[in-house]
Amino acid sequence: MTDTAARSAARGAANQAGARIDRDAYAKAGDFLPLQGIDHIEFWVGNARQASAYYRALWGFSPVAFSGLETKVRDRASYVMVQNGIRLVLTAPLTPDGEIAEHVRAHGDGVHDIAFAVDDVEAAWRATTERGAVSALAPTELDGGADGVLRKASIRTYGETLHSFVDRSAYHGAFAPGYRRVKASAAAAGGLSLLEVDHCVGNVALGEMDRSVAFYRDVMGFSQLIHYDDKVIHTDYSALMSKVMTNGNGRIKFPINEPATGKKRSQIQEYLDWYGSRGCQHIALRTEDIVGTVRRLRDNGVEFLGLPHEYYATLAERVGDVGVPIDTLEELGIEADRDEEGYLLQIFTRPVQDRPTFFFEIIERHGSRGFGVGNFKALFEAIEREQAKRGNL
Ligand code: FE2
Image 1: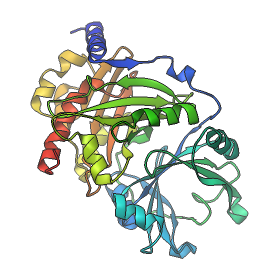
Image 2 (image 1 turned 135 degrees about the vertical axis):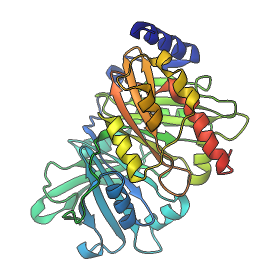
Image 3 (image 1 turned 30 degrees about the horizontal axis):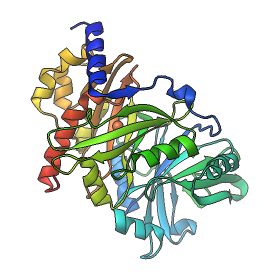
Image 4 (image 1 turned 45 degrees about the vertical axis):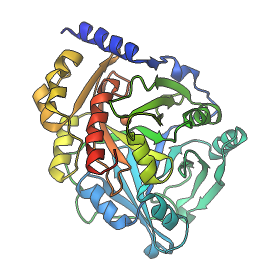
């Protein structure tokens, strides 16, 4: 099949399936909340020291900052891990009481804060709280002494998840006041090229999608980029709906998922049952070398969802040339999809903690700004096979 034929086939399939794409979404997004990008993502976990070793040894992140007893912080330990433009903060409680211990008890390990880099924390907090956001932290200057001040504020989004606004322009220390720099004692795993956060997906409960979409539209000034209805995203057993919200410069992309009724329990419902509330389901990390990166991740012990041979048997026909032999994609379990703008390659990990909740996606984009709608069915069937093994389907 030629590229053009593949493209129009993909377009036809997407239209027929009920995916509605708004190409003007970026232009429509409000400009009252300029976001420079994602500053960091903070996970609240049971054991931050061990989590940091996992991200170093398997995922190639380097530890850059630490906060805990040795820095006179007595209620929590935090490790800041960096790879290119991705900054993860892993925080665990040091005491049985308090919000972190409570969060871990209720949810297991999970995403606590998706923080944005902004130029003006006060303006971002004011613009969103005036529009109805619930404040979690009023604008605050964290005093770093000779290192300057870090400005921060936070608002609440779905479940117990926060969005912080961070301004580092007047701060020159390690991650934040209360942290010290870390000299890497062991080298991070090499050969990985994870570049930046591509998108962060939130799961909300049945009937709550529109409330969450309205929050990102009315409170954050985002616009709706894509709507996938449950006619697109369904298998024999389960279904879900998804709407993708984006900000004005397109750097932030937040798909929101809601379970739809099917014959059995959808993967979204499984997440909600085990996380115990709405929350962040997965984060996609962008790479420009998905083949090399996934090969290295697999060698290091990261586990991915597997797709059946049938998926690859018809893939070339559906997506045309994607620059990687289909055999290689199959060997590594990488999926491909094409739309009218180009193509993408993607793969999904198994959950990265004991509960069947949060996982990662690795994505390589070649023009496509989509999310792999052509793979949804095969992907969800793969997830359902895993759900069945867990007794959760
Ligand atoms: Fe995704």
